[in-house]
Length: 321
Length: 289
View 1 (tube, rainbow over the protein chains, first blue to last red):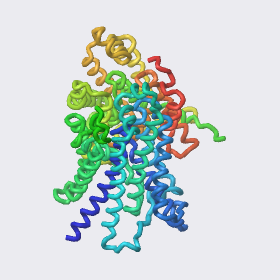
View 2 (cartoon, each protein chain N blue to C red):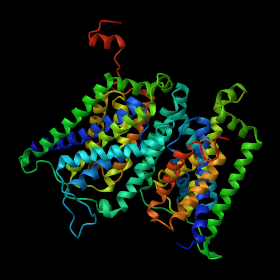
View 3 (cartoon, rainbow over the protein chains, first blue to last red):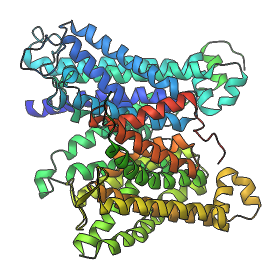
View 4 (cartoon, rainbow over the protein chains, first blue to last red):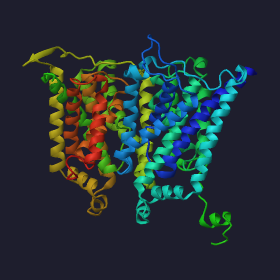
């Protein structure tokens, strides 16, 4: 019984981290129409930044040369901010151009960052990675309850991002983003500086991915470059498209479904002697899901719902229509 | 100052001419079908594996296998177009839906290939790998053949685009779709021919790259960034730009090895691409496709 509970707890924690990733991508693609195919880059930047900020200074045997021993909340904040800075750097050359350029440059950046993680031993520990990333309140929360405590932490972060996304649906800022997505010329004609709005949306979504990365670092406690492959980006896309892009609840639902699917198939290999091919078959199926979802249900399981002007007025108690 | 070694330049021409072939395919498909095909790298991989099966599994001579790889890859590309892209075109969804679909397709193909052939590095069975030294530069007979084949194909593409009705219709569709349609161009016919030429060139590029390095499932995906950089350098949709862009990126990558770690070769392509996007996003040739 306890074993099953701890399995469910770990699946939910990972699903929660993916839900934050999907909510970030929802701000990019769902709300603003930004084609970000390098989401894993922000995830990795968040994870490595908090790891380097919080671990103790390295001993002579370790490859990396930094480690500041700062408190974990400072590390997480640093991870979020670092992801935001990377988004600005990536946004400057791409966000003024048509959508495809961001797709190309972001997928490129994610790959280059991975080469960097593998080769810059002084910074990232190289292929061996970084071990012993601290876990928050480790000594204070009793050991048998720790995983539940961490799950609570992740779910609180999901709730925070979800609340922000809900707010985005109603705020003037969110309306401008959707107008850029649906008809940029109209937004420009209304005098909106669309580059600036796009940049803000891009940074906000990237910071969510940075938060997800930081939470992942303190959950996994070990970081290696192999954990930050392009498949994380694609899984997040599938989660968002299957769940419903433009709908925060859809992003969370999608992440839950995709991660449950992945974890459920993890124990298949031993059954039929398919051990070696299950990982690639699983990724093939992820690809099939993308193709099928775009063709037959592009709006996702929970389609986007924008409240009408009349509904908006009623909620604000204007009474006007 | 590091003394310059002409070996890097020769390597650059070899790599660059293969990238140029694949980049022409990518840019033609973008021009006519109006979406960026993220599965393009996998067509390159398919070409390399098709030739591998014919050459090693079936034991055919390498040249026969390389030629056979073209119709096999083209047939797969056409079948995928019919099943995956054509229904979306008919629904009239925009280029972004096609783009996302191609990302999914890329995952299916790459992981499908890995499921069948595993992630091991494979090689063709062929002789001619002994290098000879010409003016202090090491080069193999195979590498000379790679450059010659690429250049011949580029000239052939030039003749096709400028001297045939098909080529002119393709360029017309790429530059102004509705005007081309109203002038009597058969849109779906042009789409089919674009896949044939684009996938065919890319299959050859895959065989040549497999010949110069190794064959593995991620070879095409790993080159996607480089191909994009070549296409952007030349201006998206411009086949001549893609040729020049491919050569330029290949040479820049190989020459960079003299100055920085070879692990960062793709970073060179990426840096060139970002600088160009900031400075001249319409491409070096400036939209005169």
